[in-house]
Image 1 (tube, rainbow, N blue to C red):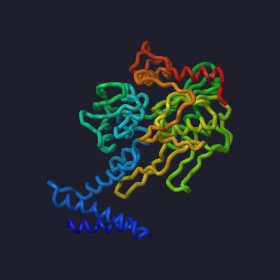
Image 2: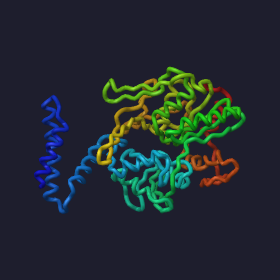
Image 3: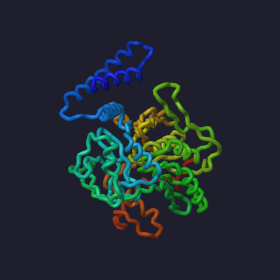
Image 4: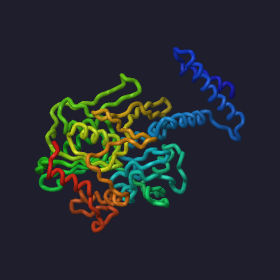
Length: 411
C-alpha cells in the first residue's frame, strides 16, 4: 500500500513539473523523489500511523513558510475564516496580525474592540494564547485559538518593546463589526476623517463623510490613517481619486516578470482635487494606507506627518483549490509613483513610507493616544475607553497637522 502511494505521488509530482529543459526536469524530479522517500520512511517506521494527506499538508505548509511572512497555505477551515472576516463581521478580539521576524506581531488593534480597549498596541508580539506558546505555530492555528464564541474568555500574552517582562491581557471575545470611517469638524474650517480600514464600502463612506464636512464649512482636511492595516487595493486607488485629478499614477505593482507591471491611475476630475489636506501615519499604517500616503507624498498633494509606516508593500493573490483549501501567495510588490518600494526588507529593516514631518511617539504615549481616540467622536457620550478624560495626553501629530493647515495649506 505504501509503495503504491509512493509511486502515485512520484507520478503526480513529476507530471506537475514537466519542463522543456530536461536538466531542470531531472533536478526537480530528484528533489521531489526525496520528499516521497521521506514520506515512505515515515509511513514504514514512525511510531504512530500517519495519514498521507496530513503529511503532504505539513510539507506544503513548510514549503510556503520558506517564502515570506505573508504567503500562507490555508486549509479549508482557515480559508473559510478568512472569507468570513472580509464580510465585515466576525467573532474575536479585534486585532490584525502578521508574521514579522518569526514572531506573530500585531499590525493594529481595531477601534472599539476588546483588544483596543485592553491596550494592545501595534508591534506587540504575541507569545502565548491561554498559556500555550505559539511561536512556530501556523498562523491559521493561532487564529483558531484567538477566535471563539462571543462572551468566552481568552488570555493573550504579549512581549512589548521596552518592557522586560511579558504582559497578560485577559480578553472576552465579541462580535467584531468594522466601521471604517469616523469624521467630525475640529473647528469651523478644518475637517477630520479617521479611516480605519480599506474595506469594500470605505470609498463610498469617505465620499459621504467629505460631503457632510463640506456642508459644515470644511476648507481643509486631516486624513488620519494611523493604525490602519490596509485592505483592498482598488479602494486605496479610489480614495486617491477623491483628491488627485485625472491622469496621475498613484501606485503600480510589479511581479517577477517585466510584463507583469500594472499601473493604477486617477480618472476624471477629483471632487476634492483642490482641498488642502494632511495625512497622518504611524508604524501601524500598512499596505493600502502606505499606498495612499506614498502617492500623496510623491505627487506633492499632501503633507505626511507621523512615524515611518509598517512596510507591508506586497501583493497577495488567492489560489483556491477543489478541496476547500487555498494558497495565499505573494505575486508582486507595490511601488509609489516615483518607483519607491513600500515593502520593508526583513534583513536591513528599510522600508515603509517616511513622513515629511516625523513625530515619534513612545509606546506608552501611543497606547493612550489610541485608547483615547474614541473621545473625538463621543458627541457628549462617555466612551468606553480605558483612558479617563483627565489622563488624556496631547496628540502631537494632530496638533502639528492643525498648525500646518492654518499656516500653509497643502495644494
